[in-house]
Image 1 (cartoon, each protein chain N blue to C red):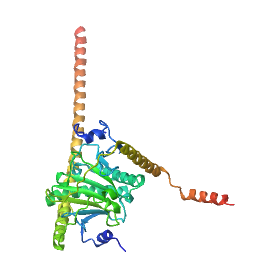
Image 2 (cartoon, chains in turn yellow, cyan; image 1 turned 45 degrees about the vertical axis):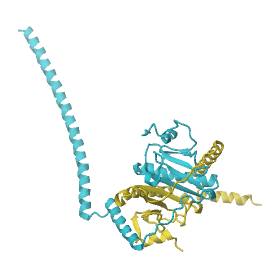
Image 3 (tube, rainbow over the protein chains, first blue to last red; image 1 turned 120 degrees about the vertical axis):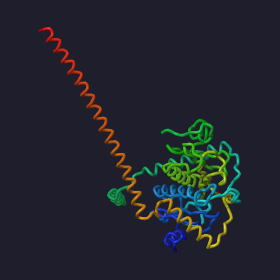
Image 4 (cartoon, chains in turn orange, green; image 1 turned 180 degrees about the horizontal axis):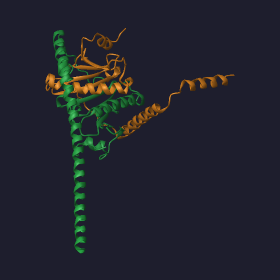
Length: 162
Length: 210
């Protein structure tokens, strides 16, 4: 079963922007007049799985459209949101960026009340995040074994079996 | 790298370490630190190191770095804090809810405690309204990207661009030629002066032998 966004990409009739890797279209479930969805053509389920190269393009297309709505629709502001994962508010299993054009007094409320954080919690959380970030950098540096190396490894492993 | 900084902006000051902040990530273009009044603990503020008020002011490289860095931080939250979702949120302009004078990319860990955040009711539009909007947007976007220029208009634009390039080439050629002429003239002048001096010397010598 094809995903909703892949279907829109295939049909083409709803697209308002298209290039080799990125498309944009009016949101199927808009939260404001003219909410726009920007998505990669490649089927990627979550934000975290999107290639950096494609993500860079998506960023620039989103920013371009964010500027364009001022001129085209006379908007006063824009929200850019990435709803990542079900708990992040993601509804379709295809990564996308939402661009919400905003008008003064449009009645949309996306504000929140912050809570004063405990210094100890902040310190602990900072350490967790720094550690997780440096671990993923290290994982990127590990060179992948070539096929030749893999074969050698397999042979050594087999020889060790009793 | 040289940065454009606003001394009175607290976010510039944190990003450039003029005041303390819980920085968890930085590179040449941007810096992320924990919000001390978060939605939920772990709420990060990712800001460009240059002072920018809204994303529309950012150049392409900065935009790219912000998106890629947001992905890294979001992944770190999922891995390190074991949350099952994150939300990236940017407010460009007061009408969009922007409160800070500096562009901020919020990266928020999501869980039960903040599940009602960003729940905005759907906006209903008729199929006809949607279609009209789509047509207008498509047309104007193509116009902005120069996609609808006729073949003739495209040719004219190309010619203008190549003419400008040729003009630049010609200018630099003429400048180089002018410099060369100047140095040749200088040499001739110097040689002229030397010849004059030689003649004077010869005259003086012949005076002696008169």
